[in-house]
Amino acid sequence: MVLFFFMGAAALGLLLGLGSGWILVGVAAVLCAWDLDHFAQRLRSAGRVEGARELERRHLLRLLAVSGLGFLLAAIALGLKLELGFGAAVFLGLLVVISLSQLVGLLRRESD
Image 1 (tube, rainbow, N blue to C red):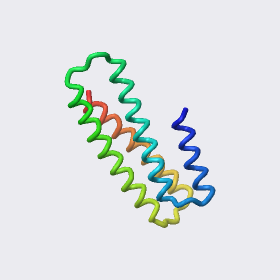
Image 2: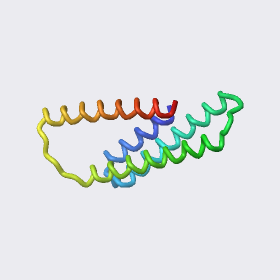
Image 3: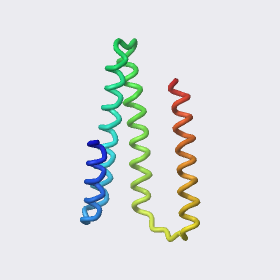
Image 4: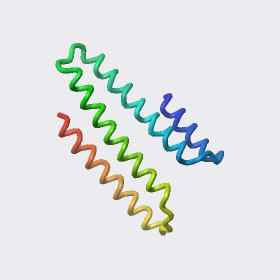
Protein backbone atom coordinates (compact mmCIF):
# COMPACT_ATOMS: atom_id res chain seq x y z
CA MET A 1 0.00 0.00 0.00
CA VAL A 2 2.79 2.41 0.90
CA LEU A 3 4.53 1.54 -2.37
CA PHE A 4 1.53 2.84 -4.34
CA PHE A 5 1.45 6.00 -2.23
CA PHE A 6 5.09 6.81 -2.98
CA MET A 7 4.74 5.93 -6.66
CA GLY A 8 1.71 8.22 -6.80
CA ALA A 9 3.74 10.92 -5.09
CA ALA A 10 6.42 10.52 -7.77
CA ALA A 11 3.81 10.83 -10.51
CA LEU A 12 2.40 13.91 -8.81
CA GLY A 13 5.92 15.34 -8.64
CA LEU A 14 6.22 14.94 -12.40
CA LEU A 15 2.91 16.71 -12.91
CA LEU A 16 4.08 19.56 -10.67
CA GLY A 17 7.23 19.95 -12.75
CA LEU A 18 9.85 18.60 -10.35
CA GLY A 19 13.09 17.46 -11.95
CA SER A 20 12.80 14.05 -13.55
CA GLY A 21 16.19 13.07 -12.12
CA TRP A 22 14.91 13.49 -8.57
CA ILE A 23 11.77 11.54 -9.42
CA LEU A 24 13.94 8.75 -10.84
CA VAL A 25 16.05 8.62 -7.68
CA GLY A 26 12.90 8.55 -5.53
CA VAL A 27 11.28 5.76 -7.52
CA ALA A 28 14.48 3.68 -7.47
CA ALA A 29 14.78 4.15 -3.69
CA VAL A 30 11.14 3.17 -3.12
CA LEU A 31 11.50 0.04 -5.24
CA CYS A 32 14.71 -0.96 -3.43
CA ALA A 33 13.08 -0.42 -0.03
CA TRP A 34 10.03 -2.45 -1.10
CA ASP A 35 12.24 -5.30 -2.33
CA LEU A 36 14.36 -5.34 0.83
CA ASP A 37 11.26 -5.32 3.04
CA HIS A 38 9.77 -8.20 1.07
CA PHE A 39 13.05 -10.12 1.32
CA ALA A 40 13.24 -9.56 5.09
CA GLN A 41 9.64 -10.75 5.51
CA ARG A 42 10.38 -13.92 3.56
CA LEU A 43 13.48 -14.61 5.67
CA ARG A 44 11.52 -14.11 8.91
CA SER A 45 8.70 -16.38 7.74
CA ALA A 46 11.18 -19.11 6.81
CA GLY A 47 12.40 -19.44 10.38
CA ARG A 48 15.98 -20.65 10.66
CA VAL A 49 17.87 -20.19 7.39
CA GLU A 50 21.20 -21.87 6.70
CA GLY A 51 23.75 -19.41 5.28
CA ALA A 52 21.54 -16.37 5.80
CA ARG A 53 24.50 -13.98 5.55
CA GLU A 54 25.50 -15.36 2.16
CA LEU A 55 21.89 -15.26 0.99
CA GLU A 56 21.57 -11.63 2.09
CA ARG A 57 24.86 -10.73 0.39
CA ARG A 58 23.81 -12.35 -2.89
CA HIS A 59 20.41 -10.65 -2.74
CA LEU A 60 21.99 -7.25 -2.12
CA LEU A 61 24.44 -7.73 -4.99
CA ARG A 62 21.61 -8.75 -7.33
CA LEU A 63 19.50 -5.81 -6.17
CA LEU A 64 22.44 -3.45 -6.74
CA ALA A 65 22.97 -4.81 -10.25
CA VAL A 66 19.29 -4.64 -11.19
CA SER A 67 18.81 -1.20 -9.65
CA GLY A 68 21.95 0.17 -11.27
CA LEU A 69 21.00 -1.17 -14.69
CA GLY A 70 17.44 0.07 -14.32
CA PHE A 71 18.63 3.49 -13.17
CA LEU A 72 21.05 3.70 -16.10
CA LEU A 73 18.42 2.68 -18.65
CA ALA A 74 15.90 5.10 -17.17
CA ALA A 75 18.44 7.92 -17.26
CA ILE A 76 19.18 7.14 -20.91
CA ALA A 77 15.46 7.03 -21.67
CA LEU A 78 14.95 10.42 -20.03
CA GLY A 79 17.67 11.88 -22.23
CA LEU A 80 16.38 10.48 -25.53
CA LYS A 81 13.91 12.33 -27.69
CA LEU A 82 12.24 10.04 -30.21
CA GLU A 83 9.07 10.44 -32.19
CA LEU A 84 7.27 7.14 -32.71
CA GLY A 85 3.95 6.36 -34.25
CA PHE A 86 1.31 4.65 -32.15
CA GLY A 87 1.87 1.26 -33.80
CA ALA A 88 5.61 1.39 -33.22
CA ALA A 89 5.09 2.40 -29.60
CA VAL A 90 2.66 -0.47 -29.00
CA PHE A 91 5.04 -2.93 -30.68
CA LEU A 92 8.00 -1.74 -28.60
CA GLY A 93 5.89 -1.85 -25.43
CA LEU A 94 4.87 -5.45 -26.11
CA LEU A 95 8.47 -6.33 -26.90
CA VAL A 96 9.58 -4.88 -23.56
CA VAL A 97 6.86 -6.73 -21.63
CA ILE A 98 7.73 -10.05 -23.28
CA SER A 99 11.45 -9.50 -22.74
CA LEU A 100 11.00 -8.61 -19.08
CA SER A 101 8.78 -11.64 -18.46
CA GLN A 102 11.43 -13.87 -20.03
CA LEU A 103 14.15 -12.25 -17.91
CA VAL A 104 12.13 -12.67 -14.71
CA GLY A 105 11.52 -16.32 -15.58
CA LEU A 106 15.23 -16.84 -16.21
CA LEU A 107 16.16 -15.19 -12.90
CA ARG A 108 13.60 -17.27 -11.01
CA ARG A 109 14.93 -20.51 -12.50
CA GLU A 110 18.48 -19.41 -11.69
CA SER A 111 17.68 -18.61 -8.06
CA ASP A 112 15.94 -21.96 -7.46
